[in-house]
Image (tube, rainbow, N blue to C red):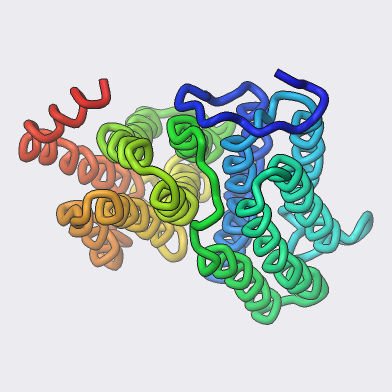
Length: 401
């Protein structure tokens, strides 16, 4: 296999995730932590909006390289150097997240630096992809369409760097719509997905990374504060909630999604990959990040007895991020079922709406009890599905053993 130039990967179903891709993900781990902290430092609807918009921008970067790795071996030749270059730029993007919307006094003008480094990450991806597609006119055409959408999007982000308030966030939203709609409306024709198992594994790993942020949020919420039985019990509830979210995705949804992707061919495979993974996994990750933010604040309430009482309730934006994030996660899982199997998962839709509808009441419940309720709801969902759909679940596990 040549190692001195870019090269196309043959349609190999056994192509798996490389170590350089995992290394690349470490930068994204840090970026997710920075996004959670950004929202925690600006705990308002605007702050949460900024965090979600930031996640959508960085998600596009990550997805771009996930698609690239299904076309070329990113751990060989020039592609390896492109990945390292993208990692360096992405790391600078992550470092500037706290100042991406409001520059701190002194030093470089961080909002502009953020946009420049983000543009560099995207351009490196396009250059590497175009090199890989030099013998594939269809792929080159769709990549050039992607480039056409990238230019105005980066331009709008550049203008937004010098604004503030609603106009700044509004321009971010418009920039995202231009970029996302350009790719979506261009359609799946021209995209190549040679290794569906590798592609599905990449997205499974990023879900794990996001869930890991939920675990980290618990530890950050507790910080250096003294342990107590209340904190220990609440920590177990937080871990159970994260484990339940893992279960609801990996037990069946991930298996079915990968199976459908593997069975599809040509344009239909590219369309499934775009819908189920590129687009629908964004609200899935956003839901996890919002839950992590809610957990972080809940544990601050529980652990910081100097400023909060043990029976104090989580209220305002933090509780809505917890219940809203869980709702977004469960509703997206149901949407994945609709896309892959043609029917909604009703119980997950109901459980998604329930905590949001009950949030005004939950604002009067102690933070520790809130975590117990959230964990119990997810465990109840898992138990119900294991009993109600035991035979179908067994068939899915047997088929994908």
